Length: 234
Image 1 (tube, one colour):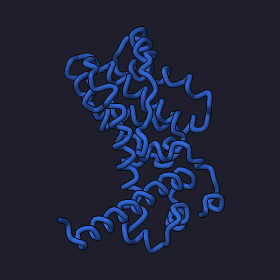
Image 2 (image 1 turned 90 degrees about the vertical axis):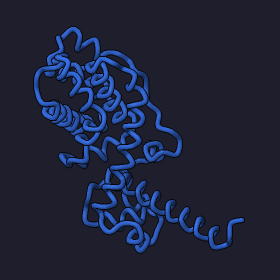
Image 3 (image 1 turned 90 degrees about the horizontal axis):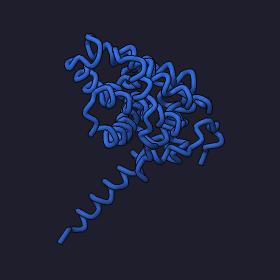
Image 4 (image 1 turned 120 degrees about the vertical axis):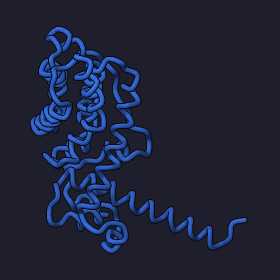
């Protein structure tokens, strides 16, 4: 039979996990809205409805907090897309589907798009998503001759830059959805896929992705990241 001390330890651990989760969720929303400004910690604890001391019980710096937020968001995004694309044997089809689905997520989850936009050229931004999702497909495509003979990391860099440029230009633009297949097709052509096939692969509908209830991606989907700090005060 568990002792009272065991119960207290589990309760304390659960509360610590919940507080950490609230800070990470608030960080995603506030960073998406404001970027990493000098008042980020104050804004995060205010949005989370916590005391400032709670922050330092879990994180040593804003960089550590944002790294944790990136890690959780990345895991949510990668899991969703891999579940939809892992069965695709052709590297060109897998790359097109993965890229198209990621762009679709950025459109459907505006806080994710703004968070990605504010990361900019950070190595843990779009580059990390491309690394986790598409580098294996790029390597397979080069090795099999499906893609142009170039180092897969060069192709991954091209993808990352294109994704970031797309986000910078289209965040908040309802008409941006029409540009997605054109971007995917253009990148496939740059990789050596003939124009007709590139257009066909880019036009395939792989369905919408819905983040699981309770995931960080789902919890921040409908949050208005354009709110002011005063509007989000508890």
